[in-house]
Amino acid sequence: MGNNSIHRPRRSCLYTPGINAKAMEKGKSLPADIIMLDLEDAVAPDLKEEARDMVANMIQSNPYGKREIIIRMNEFASPWGKDDLTMINDVRPDGALVPKVQSAQDIFDIDAHLDDGIALWVMVEMPLALLNIQEIAAASQSTKLAGFIIGTNDLAKEFRAAATPDRAAFQHALSVTLTAARAYDLIAIDGVYNDIQNASGLEDECYQGQIMGYDGKTLIHPNQIDSANRIFAPAIDDIEKAQAIVAAFELPENRNKGVIKVNGKMTELLHLVEAKRLIAMHEAIAARDDI
Image 1 (cartoon, rainbow, N blue to C red):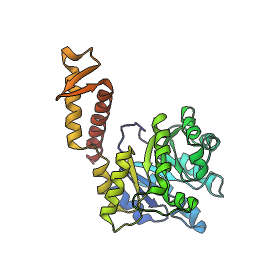
Image 2: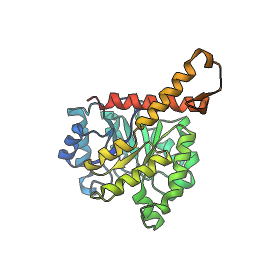
Image 3: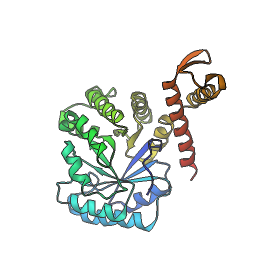
Image 4: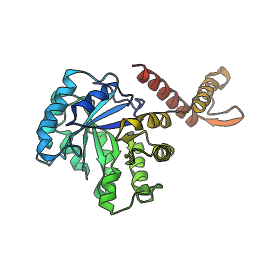
């Protein structure tokens, strides 16, 4: 359905209940980068099969444009997991998001049932997943694993931890997950912010995730999209600096140099790599927003 390029914008990832046809339809007009059609937490057990059919019909009846579509299935070992995966293979969204993953073997088992061309995303929300995070990330070298999504609500339950504004209880989880993602070129998406009415609290948490290096944030309400899109996009000042770095290295006198001065600052080739990444992301966002 779309490519899974590292430069594709994933600033805002909106969870949308798979049992709510109105919400799924509304997602086709929202500026979220990712629409996450949810068959797990948002759907009661006796409605799982109905929700699966609704999600399949919604995707097949009318496309979501440039928005990336990921279906969060039920746990693979649950009574609904294998049927969810069969439906995902049939309707071919951009990705399948699998909850409660705990080991690299989980990745291999799920990947064996997932068709080529559909990216595999996993929730990092269990203590064992954190202990095994390097091995889980390394599984991407021989599977369709594309990204991690932190499940802070489930981690709070598993840790018996309190969710405070500084997210002190989750700093280790956020850090090791991001480290593993970057080591294996995976996408990393931050967890949800639960207080829908607290706009300033949401912004603070978005800035926290953005500063750490996360690519975007999972959201639970459409009114959270604009903040995530703005905060996780490259700042205009950063784009201007990046363009200046690229232009400076392209000057004939700098073509074979590893270190140059740009606007009075020592600038290395590693800064050039990051500058090109920022520019590519900026251009991808501009193309994505043109809908």
